[in-house]
Length: 133
Image (cartoon, rainbow, N blue to C red; front, side, top):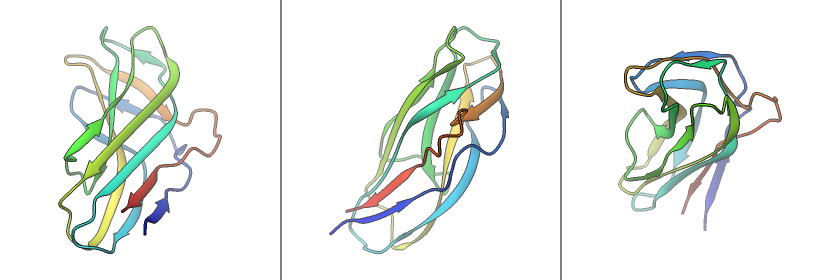
């Protein structure tokens, strides 16, 4: 039986990014109930930026307690596209039972910056889905 949790709206404010992966957007908590079950985080939404200073754009990923997942699909906003759809997924296979803080992380391309990065720029109520199987 699966346990589902979803975040609140992601559209909270604009963020400035550099080449270091950093948390952006609001956090939410997930209670993991079973010891040997995977936790999957998913987001299909949109993102925008006012400007990008490097040619490679921005990378995004979903993290639990700031930890890297065992498996992931990173989202990206490529240079020349300051508003685009984004899909991300992270899978944690070894997390113990407990409460975890979930958040989007973002990073500009090496040597670059990104200004006024916004999750869910249209304010459509996009959310992160967390599933424990």
